[in-house]
Image 1 (cartoon, rainbow, N blue to C red):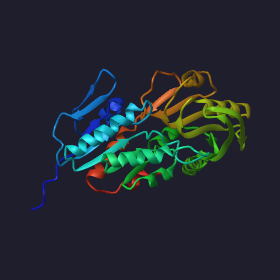
Image 2 (cartoon, rainbow, N blue to C red):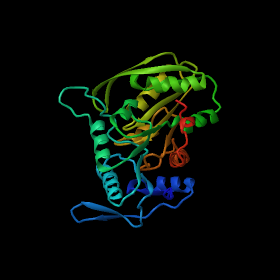
Image 3 (cartoon, rainbow, N blue to C red):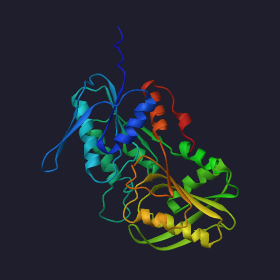
Image 4 (cartoon, helix red, strand yellow):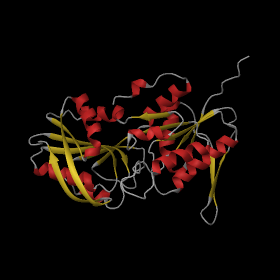
Amino acid sequence: MEPEVLSPKIFASSQSIILANKIADHYGIELGKVKKNIFSDGEFQVSFEESIRGRRIFLIGSTMPPNDNLMEMLLMIDAAKRASARHITAVMPYFGWARQDRKDKPRVPIAAKMVAKILQAAGATRIMTMDLHADQIQGFFEIPVDHLYASTILLPQIEKLNLQNITIASPDMGGSKRAYAYSKFLKSEVVICYKQRKKANVISHMELIGNVEGRNVIIVDDMVDTAGTLTKAADLMMEKGALSVRAITTHAILSGEAYSRIENSSLEELIVTDTIPLKQTCSKIKVVSCAPLFADVMHKVQSNTSISDKFLM
């Protein structure tokens, strides 16, 4: 006799409660109960307040700084493993530490690889994430990785703009593949920014490869952190004769002076997803939810059906 397949449960780490509630709502079940106890020295403990024995569970939590966010995900995975969950899927809309995916100079770590190993050691049996900083990070895992693309929800936003003479732009050489994928779908031209850095988050020089005169430019990128590159690229394109400049990025890290830079830049609009909650409001920032996409893919994972229709890029 076949064992009964129990229905899945969805839980959230504290930093992703809002997004997790949206995902659970789209999935059609209530968010599970998990408790976080914080000790006086800052150490914390998580505990599931309901049985998860024999079930597939989805643990939702982006792992942006501070480090507590990653640690909370690891503790939830370990707790789920010790509570006899059947499958443990770590749903990480934003996979933190992904920018350190290789050795770009001597004596530095490959943090993305280290995080992948720790997640597996904790007990994760599957990873679900969106727009990794580098596609090859999937190869750091020895478990299945569902790498979703935000293009499935962001491309319709571009189409709604009803713009003529669109040019897709990459803010750096590393994002050229993403820019070409968007341009192929939109049948548009592509330009690329070439930049040189003094150090992390500080640009010393930027040049534009391609022509934007008389064009409505849309910059596409996987993340926006300090917004230095993004706003500098927008200003440069307006100087080169662009009619307008907008930006679409998946992960709104937005640290330091990012909000003021965006507000005071040549950007008409910045469209982001809700993989990371915004720290404050900004008149130029529009948020598109990724909850329906994650809920749909989670349904397909639970029912063991194909998710290939979710890959536009």
